[in-house]
Amino acid sequence: MQKRWIVPGLLAAAFAFAATGLANSGNGHGKKFGPYGVVTDDHGSCGPAHAWAVDTELRTFTVKRNRDGTFRLTRRDHGAFLTNEGQSPGACETHGRHGSTVPAGKTGHFRGFLRGTISGGTFDPNATCPANCGDTDVWIATFFGPNATFSCFTDSRDCKFNFQYHAPHQGLRYHHWYDKGKGAGTMLHEKFRGDIAAS
Image (cartoon, rainbow, N blue to C red; front, side, top):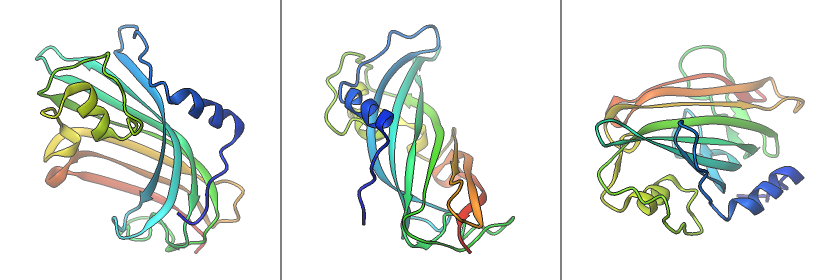
C-alpha cells in the first residue's frame, strides 16, 4: 500500500462501531454479524500478481440454517477503493470493451456479495471475535470452529458472487467494472465487464 486512504466521516464512524462485531437478532432472514472494518488488496482479471487497488470497506456476515443442517453464509461488502499504478482490473479480460492501465491515486466506491454454504463444525453465535474477524476464513473458524468448510473455498458449484465498482469524476476512460460469477475452484465461472482504466 503506497498511501493511506482517508475514510469519509460516516465510514470512519462505522469502523469505530465495527470493532464490536455484534450480532443482530435476525428477522427470519438469518442472523447478521458485523459490520467489521476491512482493508485489503483488490486483484482484477489478471490474477493475484498485481493488486490494482486497496479497498477500505465494511463487511457483514449473515447466517441462515438450511434444512439439511448446513448453513447459508452471505458476506456483503461495501466501501471505497484507491488505485495503484499498473494493470487495470479488466486488462486481461478477453471479451468486451475494457482498458489496460490505471494510474495511482484514483478513487471510487464498490459493493457486492459472496454467498456459499458452511458444512461441518458447530455454530456458536456467541463466539468472541478476534481483531481480524472481518477476514472470511477467520470469521468462519471463530463461529463454526476449525473443522468447518465453506463451499466458496473449495471445488464447488455452490458459490455465487457479484461485485460492482464505480469511479465517477476521475478523468478515466472507463469508470465502471463488474466482477461476478458462480462456483469456486475448478468449477469457477467468472465474468468481467467494463473496467477502471485511463487507457
